[in-house]
Length: 168
Image (cartoon, rainbow, N blue to C red; front, top):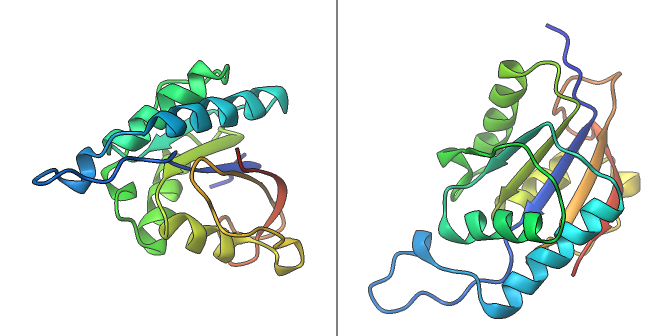
């Protein structure tokens, strides 16, 4: 099957509050600075004219709120798919979730992933052509835009080049 995917946009959730006593990590909310971070990243993505045909989001509260902040910053997105595999995801879980989404929508040209570390950093290192690896990790609300090499298998090691990186 041929896929049209050309770009991946990886976004780490914005800064979240520390869990309160008895609160599950899954239910942590964004801090006030985190809300501003998400809006800033949304503004940058909109200003750079990046679009996403598919949006995969961890169902955790802080990633849902990051999605809201990205949109409040002006980034227009299609309805998000809340993907349970993105919470506490390993590299393999992230790759499988992306591959499944692309197979379900093979004409998609761009896919955004809103998730957590360390999985996003592992994914970025896995996909990046080492010659373009010029980032300092994935701080909160960071966005990495990757261009996929059409001459390599989808999601193969080293199959992408970082074309944009933003830290609010």
